Structure formats: C-alpha cells, structure tokens
Image (cartoon, rainbow over all chains, first blue to last red; front, side):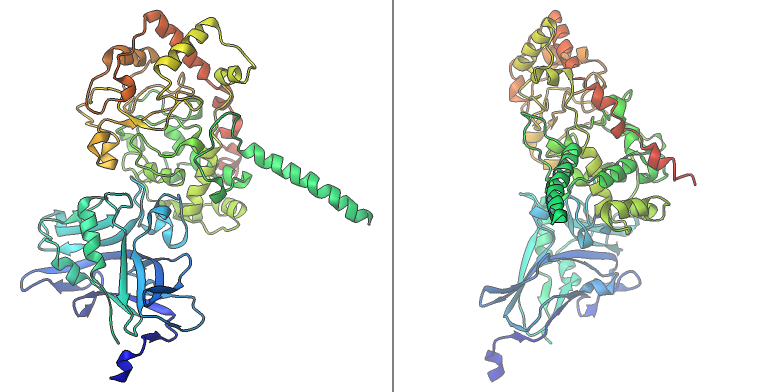
Length: 218
Length: 344
C-alpha cells in the first residue's frame, strides 16, 4: 500500500523498449498470420515509425530531455526497438513524453543523416516530407490487388499535420507497447486499404496511432 | 622571435587568401536579395562541388545507368531539356512536364512546377525515384556509388568519410547546383553600368517592366510565387499544378513562375512546353489568357502589345542571355573524373 504513493522512480532506466504487439502477442513480421476475428486473418510485412523528442516529466515539469532525439523503430530489426538513452544518473519522473514522427522544422531543413537519412525508406520523394509511420501487409479483408494494405502516414503542414505527441505515465517500466490490433479495430480494411500522402485521412489515422501506445507495467 | 613575427604576418595573408577562395565558390551579386539557401548547413567546398558535379553528370543515378541529371538539364540550354515539350527519361518514357532550367537555385525557396519539393537538398530525390525519369531508389544509388571505383575516394575527400550516405550524396548534388549562378547577361552589365541597351532593348525593357515584371521580378526574373497565367488545360495531361500538392482549391491551375534568364535558350516554354517560340508566349499573354477564378491578379487586365512592341520586348528578353554561364567550363561534363578513372 505504502509503495503505491512513492514517486515512480526509474532507476537506471537507460533503455526504452518499443515493442509492437498484436493484442497479447508480440508482433512478428512476415512469417506469422494473426486472426482479426473467427474468419479473417492478417499478416504484416513492414512496420516502421519515428520516435522523436523523448522527454521525462515529473509533476508536469520536464526533468530530462534527449538531445537530437530521432529514432527509427523498425520491427524487422530488433535492435532498433531498444532506444538507448544517454543518462548518467537515475532521475525521478512520473511521465514520459515523445513524438510519433518528425517535426515541421526538420521536414523543411533538407537532407538529414543517421536515422533521418532518406535511404531509410521513410522519406517521400515525389513530395518533400517524412513518413512518420509505415504499416504494410496483407489481409483477406482487403479488396485491393494481392489483398495488400499500405499505410504511409505523414504530413507536416496544416491542415494535414500528422505529427503526434504522446504523454504516458511511467509505471516503473521501460517497455512501451504499441498495439496494432487496437489500431486496426478502428480501421475498415475493406474500405481503406491505403493511405499514401498527407491528407485528412492520414491525420485521423495518426491520431489513432498515438492512442495505441501504452507503458506496460512490469 | 623572427619566426613569431613571420607567423603573425602569414596568418592574415593565409586567412585572406582562404576567404577569397571561399568567396569565389559562391557570391551574391550586388543588389541581389539574400539567398534562401542556408549555406551554414552545407558550407561549400571545392571537393564537394566537384563530387556533386560528377554525380550530376553520372547516369549511375538511374536504374539502368542510362540517364543522368544532365540528360534533361543540359548546360548549353540553361540546364533544361531542349527540343522536348515533355521531358523524357529512362527507356524513352515521356514525363508529364517540361524540365525547368536550372540556375540561381540558391535564391529559390520551393522547387518543381507545383512546389512539391521544399528544399534544394531533397530535390534530386524527385527525378531519381520518378518512374518516368530515373526510376531508381536512393538506397540503390548509394549502394552503387559505394561499390564503384571512384566514389568512395571522392566522398572521403569531400566529407572525410568513405562510407556513402544519402545525406552526403544529396548535399554534394546541392553544392554543384548552388554554383549554377547566372549573373553576367547583357542586362546585368547594363545594370552595372558597364554596357548600354540599344533603343529597341530600352523600349522592350520599359514594356517588360510595365507588363511582365510583377511575376518575372528583377533581378531573378521570378517572384518565386505560384501563378495561374491563363493557359487552357491540356485535356490529355489534366495538370492543375500547385493544387495537387497543397489540396487548396485556390491553387488550381497555378504553376511556379519560372525565371526568364537565358530564356533565349531554354525553349520550349510553359510547364508542358506547349510554346516553342517567345512570340507564341507573348501572343498567349495578349490574346490567349483564359479567365478563371484563380487567374493571376497581374493578368486580370488584358495585356496590349503591338507587333512592333512584341519585337522590342523579345529584344529585351534576349539581353538576359548569359553566354558566360552557358559555356562555363566549371559547369560542364567532368571528364577528368568520370572518364579518366572510370574505365580502368
């Protein structure tokens, strides 16, 4: 009981893990098929997204902020799912804050390097701008060619700004889950099998994406 | 003691020599606006410019190694694709627009006829990946460059790193494009009071300032804006320009105002290259402008020009030809890089 009221002190929390899930299962790309319901199934080929501007808060005030905070999380490369934070000592915090995607300043600043390099497949070539979130796969529900679906969510300019900020309670855990099953429960795959450019639909999807992140209590 | 003194003398001498070298890489001509490009994020060096020049002329950027930037942007035509209304790319696929002339790009804030590209550094990604142009992925370009005989060394010299990245590739191409400055036309000499217009050119200049100068604003001869200049829609292309990017109906039929510098050599004209001659362009502005909701405010009143006035106006437009730019050896095919070591 008493421990319940202690501040959520995170000791040596120098790694954040972003774990894609499908409901209660860990999401695995390509080889694995998941059930949407009794008769429909789905398989994922690509899941990549940017996490930027990682910050820790205590009682609403920032206590630590990562410099040059841009991370491409790629479900096909497990090491990208662990983000190592360069913090020397433990800090007291009760919330973590981060962005899904890349802010407008970076979007208009030309060719970037590292995780932001255009060779990472997360930059639109025909119209400048980063893809904040990419999800691709196949499902028998889709009416498209080869039953494919492709969501490339991005856009940095009003009214189609898809950049999202998420604030979560820390819960003494360094594991952040993103539940794709929950995301898909808000999408009709038979009607909307692709989003490929900045648009009102992309903004709606970006908002849904931001709600599927949660800190998993250990 | 003596050594110390000579060092004190030497440092300012070296510094000023260094500054002069830097100056020569890029200069803003007197009375021109400040460039849009932020050079502090990509400071010019001779090595990077030369690397960018090699990349600009190397078909390695295309899927089957046949098309280079220069294929559609050749120097002698002010870096555009002469003879083709719509520029063609890989395997003779025909594009949907007339390739723009390339010059004074440091002053340009947004790229492509519809402004799809927001920064010079990422401009090259458009044609590289366009199915009708080079049909290649930047990832593959980087892999091809990395395994080539010449590029790892050139990147090492330019960036201090032989590991090639998309960022370095694009920044090098930007560096070369930034050096494409056209500032030595007869018009420029007249402005610098080193030459004088003929009476015909003088009259043409007056007509230009009255009728054309709002959009084709001096000294860059573009206001950098998107305007609907009253062209009829080509029903095969159905190209509505800026609106396809901004999704704002007020941008329907608007295209970026092109510079008129070197216009003598950058035919054909308009986004779809529908006019081959300057006379046709002027005829459009006097008699062909289609009224619509988004028509440029500068064209609301009909432009009236007699046929003699059109001749004078064209005489002025020819003073925008910059032979020094069109034939500058620093901009030409870099034989010393692409031919010497490549075939070995």
